[in-house]
Structures are given as C-alpha cells and as structure tokens.
Image (cartoon, rainbow over all chains, first blue to last red; front, side):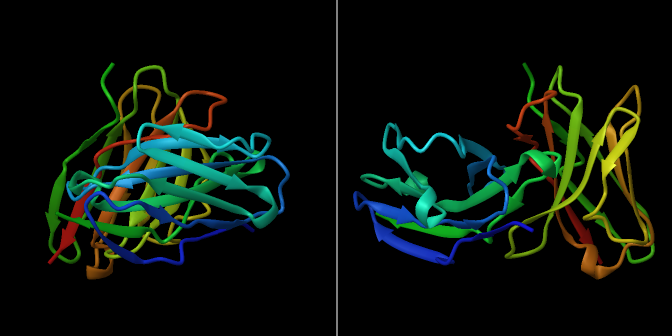
Amino acid sequence: AQKVTQAQTEISVVEKEDVTLDCVYETRDTTYYLFWYKQPPSGELVFLIRRNSFDEQNEISGRYSWNFQKSTSSFNFTITASQVVDSAVYFCALTHNNAGNMLTFGGGTRLMVKP
Amino acid sequence: NAGVMQNPRHLVRRRGQEARLRCSPMKGHSHVYWYRQLPEEGLKFMVYLQKENIIDESGMPKERFSAEFPKEGPSILRIQQVVRGDSAAYFCASSPSYSYEQYFGPGTRLTVT
C-alpha cells in the first residue's frame, strides 16, 4: 500500500516570504513517481512537477524548487518570494509501476499569501 | 492542442436522480482516470480506463457507480440514484500510453439537493 502525508493543512504567509510545503510518502516499490499539483481557487488542477525515484537531483523552476530526499521519503516544495497568486491548495501525489498509473494524493496544503 | 475537457462543469441533481459526467481526453491520450474530491479533502482514485476496457476500478463504490470509455466518444461516469453524500468535485485525467503524467480536466462539481 502507498500513502502520502501532507502534515500542514494550512499555511499563511505574507507576500515575499519563502514557504516550504512538506510531503512525506510511503511505498514498498523501488520505482515510483512523485508529483506536485496546484489547485487555485478556480478549482482546476495544475500539474507542476514529476520526479522519478531514481533522480534525486533537486529541481528549480523560477520561484519554485523541489527537494527530493529518498532517505527520509520526502519530496518538499519551496516557493521563494511568495506572491498572492500563489494562494492555492497544493497536492503531493505518488504512483508506481504496478499501480496502473493510479495517483495517490496527500490531503493537500492550503497556502494563503497575504499582501 | 485542447486540454482535457469535462462537462458539465456544474451539475445539480435531486436525490434519486441519475448523474452523467463526461470526459474528453487530450488528443492522442488513450488512458482515462476518474478521481473524486469530497469537500475539504484530497482527491481519491475511482477508476482507470482504456478504450473499451476497465483496467482498475478498485476505487469505485460497489453500487450505483459505473464508468465507460467507448471506442468513440467521451468517457462517462454514471451515478445512479444519487444521494447527498455524492456531492463532490469529480475530476477526469488523461495520459498517453506508457506515460505517468496525468493531465486533469477542470472538474465537474456535482451538487445533490
């Protein structure tokens, strides 16, 4: 069985602050994929990143960065210099080769960025 | 290239009626997934389909729910005799063969009154 835990249900920051969203996962598989999705107030799901279990390099995309630590089963997401438009619910998700692509989602973290 | 399309975006049904949710995958995508998001919760997998085949329906409630993805046309998620607890956002996602990137549609928000 696989599981994704996002312990932070809600985070509130002031614009321009950096913020890190935590994601811890459990899986017995050696090959798996991790994702982050953003759900803005409008409700759609926006794909942010996919990372496979063999690639532990951190990734940076503009103000977004991801820290994958296999040793601690974590895949944390940092937003640098947050903006009001970053306000959304962020979901971490996991799938593996034998799951038929089924995504297991964490409960989500609601990020509120105040001006 | 149009994204995943879902319709209707909002659907209101009275208890006991049927709800039909449609999903048109991205062009070239032959794998479709349905997820349900209950209020204030994360998304839960329901069913995974390929054209004319149900691959995994382990997340589907045993009764009243069914899904199909015919050779032609959109994928349909059908909920018979809806109850208040079915009120949720239903998301469809699609992916091309042998890929693990799922692209989500805008969702259908079902309200049962």
